[in-house]
Image 1: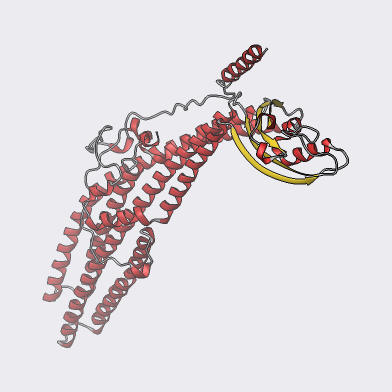
Image 2 (image 1 turned 120 degrees about the vertical axis):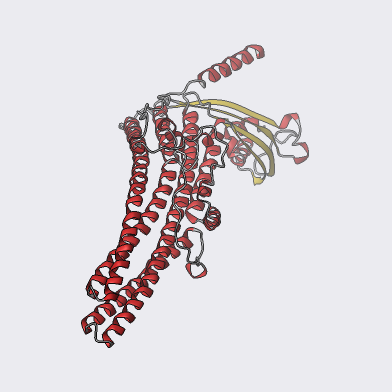
Length: 506
């Protein structure tokens, strides 16, 4: 009989294990996304293609600009930026939730140790048996069966009306086999979410790093503007002094002096106003690196450099280099797993339980054969009527998956748009910089000629004012083009993924 019982149990275990190999719901298949053969905005510009197997430090992309101060700021940002800290905490939380989900694969085991002193009622041994059941509520199905009657030694209890003490030690086990794959789909969803949060962490870090670099170059561009404004104020002061001398000599009119004075004061006003923007950019950098603005300052350093050559990732590899694309793809996989979780609710749940322990009215005889008590059982539970709840949950899960597919495809399109936008910006800004440099040369030469004419008395001061404004505007535009080039270069690196690779999620 024992051999037959053992065979039945082994057959049941094998059946459960075989059933546990299936998981309801659709298996995830990554949607096919069209990828262009080449970037539209590359044009005839020669770009260095990035090696997919390069051994470069993927995290420190800003080193390409060879700016020690930027390097220092980026290192501070990686340690103290609160958006990155927040994303890191969310990622660690999602990793813990993966372990929490995996715990459902295993049985639960609990233990109890109790001593209960009680006076028996008129029911004799039945009262003692009731006390035994009350003592071990988690093992109620076996406690009563393990308690004897009468006042003898071993597992018996005191007779009616007497005071007795029940000592017990119990272990209870419970397990829900993952027959329909509910746990596996839940773990799958948790892993996908954790990987999505890992990609979000990388995306947040890259975004903050790029924002810092762009803000830093914009601040240095303002320093270049400030130098131009300060030099302009000095030049206008000299022009005013020249005009005053000519006015005192009776050569120029009072109008010329007033015009020169007005031009100088306008330049001084612009120079003061430039400090407002610089201060705000400096404060923004302080927050990015996790410092109070009052404790942070950057010395003036006019921007003069132009963007270095940037390795260009070929289109077929771009989706593997973008953390935001990886995040959207992982969220799509998580939504697919949610469909399986919803479908699993249609199937019954099997719960296997087992309990065993020792129970006796005599503590000295607790560890004895007569004190042993045990039990085992199985329960199959299913929901008979839910008013359409499960059907609605499945439909909602499928709709959620469709929404995530759309989000993924939109993210892919935006990824290519971002690269194309910055390629176009760099290409046209480079062309504009060449033309603008010629404009600066022409404007400076024209100003020199007009000043000489003014000094010789062959032209009036209004011509000088017009040409000074033209020269200032030409130089200002040239400076701003340089700043725009650096911002676009950072934007291109960001849109190329900053050297990040999806393999880091595995």
